[in-house]
Image (spheres, rainbow, N blue to C red):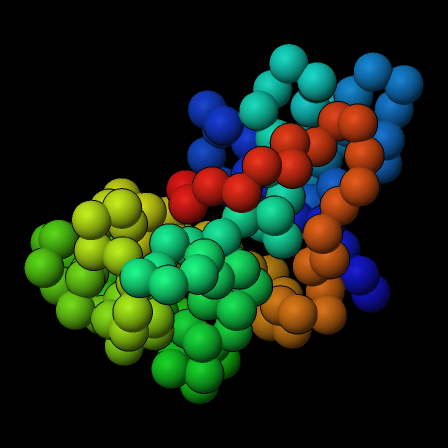
Length: 148
């Protein structure tokens, strides 16, 4: 089952696209509540498939980074507690996932968010990152690449 997983600026966690309305998207929270809610064009909505991480050479799609993280963790949740880890621990851990990440442009908060998102996806049984999360095409999705 192909899904579009979204991040919405200002709202915690991740969301699955359920349906498109005339002036909004219907999204379902990927948390314990699985609550459905509208997301409007004025919200900054980004598909995870449209995000990339900065490296010393080319940007690497987030799906490739998540796949690398899954390989490192053998498909289980992250072994690092992103809430308690300091910046040096996070960078050391992330260097195992993406050795050539740009240390100037990838911040500790980006690594925390990546680990948080990875854990949410694994908890929800979404682990085939290449197949299940395709790039989106639509007028309501923000298609810019950024390392969030």
